[in-house]
Image (tube, rainbow, N blue to C red; front, top):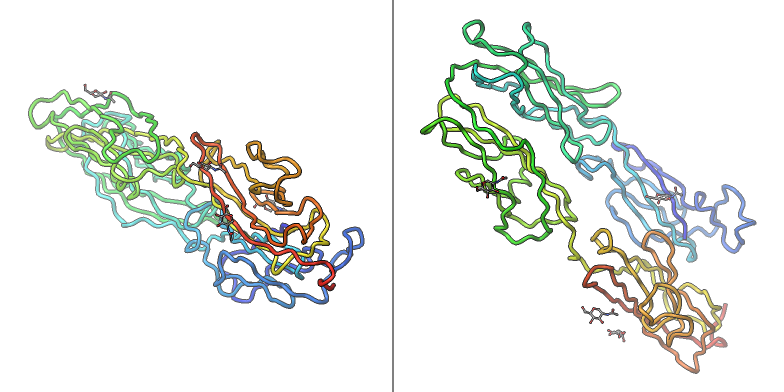
Length: 453
Ligand SMILES: *[C@@H]1O[C@H](CO)[C@@H](O)[C@H](O)[C@H]1NC(C)=O
Ligand SMILES: *[C@@H]1O[C@H](CO)[C@@H](O)[C@H](O)[C@H]1NC(C)=O
Ligand SMILES: *[C@@H]1O[C@H](CO)[C@@H](O)[C@H](O)[C@H]1NC(C)=O
Ligand SMILES: *[C@@H]1O[C@H](CO)[C@@H](O)[C@H](O)[C@H]1NC(C)=O
């Protein structure tokens, strides 16, 4: 088994050669490892793709073993915002070696940030105290990592009335907040124009700007106040619909409509969060509205605003971070990467590989920790007492790497004793209770004398 890692920048033309599998795996049929020369290319080259995560984008030439692009690859349409964008292939080379190939699609700074509009209108009460914050709309940049959105800048106004604070969400995305630095005086100036610039981290950086028109308005109103600026709530994943997340309370000192508080999600709360949670505008009660899946996102942030019904309200903001607790909701998944074709000679020595198996579990921690074995077989895997050399089936599992196992023979075979086996792989995770999966294949044993080399 060979691991080959490659990388290729996005937006390259069709036919771009990414690597030479024959050379890079140093494949030379029949030679023991010590005699394999550097850069050797197999003469009887034959490369069969067993699995390809993106057959429309990548292929391997069956004769030359060259790995190449089939069309231009746009990283953003393939992987959205994911920091890592990786394709994988499994190639069976010269009928003897499996190459696990990973191709990292590198980001280039092909997108500039953008704002959804070129003007933002804001009404701010002249009573807004220094330190009051107003969330601004975020810019969007489809590029990932360094080339994604890096920071925001605000042009300084003449009197230093406004400042900018760039905050990070738990997932690393940034959002800007306008912060009042000094008391606003409507009689002196009732309108301010600011320019917000979003910069990405490319070399050179790309940018976008939006104009902010601030209207200073008259107000004689108290604002609502949350008891705390942020809360942390832990919830089990798959919590039933309607489960209460938190009951927020913002209080307002005013009487009548000026003191009546309305709760809502802040304007920049992502759509996915709105699908998962609901908020009662009157009571501030947040409930679960969709299926919370730890494997999709283990940490969610809900930004809530509270404003009163008086004229020219100043909203208060509060952040609720929901941490999901993983539950053992995924059974292990067993996949046969390759199974020996045809039959196995009874002369096959112990250690002969008959299959390559991949076992995965979407859960994390103990819930995703796997123990695997051949049912009735010997060898490793901690199969709850059923393992140990000399099981009833002459096969065992050997761990290769990263959830890959090979099924190998663990003693000489004898066709006269048994000429066909049903090999069953069992995988069990470490959750409580544990979940398990099984998968089987059949293999025939051939008489040595009828088998020619
Ligand atoms: C290839 O990448 C994988 C992770 O994607 C890593 O585990 C492995 O060590 C790398 N192999 C080599 C030869 O660099
Ligand atoms: C809000 O008030 C209700 C009723 O008094 C209380 O049960 C709840 O715990 C409060 N919420 C917070 C976040 O303190
Ligand atoms: C192999 O054994 C498993 C487990 O005992 C069983 O579920 C499966 O049907 C068998 N397959 C064949 C082909 O006999
Ligand atoms: C698999 O789990 C079931 C219960 O879900 C249990 O009855 C069975 O014994 C387990 N099988 C193995 C091989 O652990």
